[in-house]
Length: 280
Image (cartoon, rainbow, N blue to C red; front, side, top):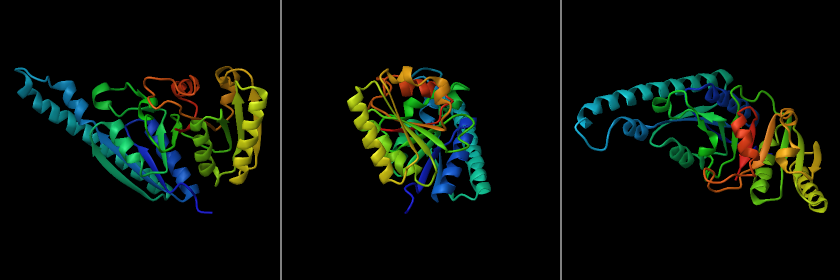
């Protein structure tokens, strides 16, 4: 069977999270026979607006400062691409690099439609030139993307053996189930499907149908679990840490304004140490 993942997008920044995402993407690309694209975005708009007032006597003298900031940021981003290419080459992975200028989240969303998977750090540093070491929440980049996202901690993902699917029968969790089934086929996952906060009859139905779907895609090592309590209570941190990957759907179309999957996924993103596979 032809593997479903053929193009992987890795947004690059000068952080250990981006390095971890690159290594993880290379491992996935080797298993799936995919190519990996590294993308950098020069945040020219924020650099300019952080230094230059809209009007005033100091405007002319700030132009050189803006130019210097942009040149420095561009140099850093070129180093990111070089480091990305070196990692891919050392792993024998087909790769290419793309350089954009604009608003990072917007450019990455525009690029993502041409890829099967985004591999990105749980924390991002696209605004390094203006915000220093202050990272950005991954949730700011998840709005509207149609491409599944694999979000990795600072040490990446070293193995793909055990996955937990948080499933509630919603359209977004169904999409996550479908996207994950295609991603997981070349691996040998033990998959736990977890349903929380549902009446037993409904939970039994959801678990049975999810198991049948996974079986139809060649995934047979499946564990079914259900709890009557909300998912935030049912899945304590030590239990989550026993999995290599947590799979969840993103409910909200406007993540910055609303919670998604209750506060479950948001909490996991903020923990920054739980690898996540996310789909709208």
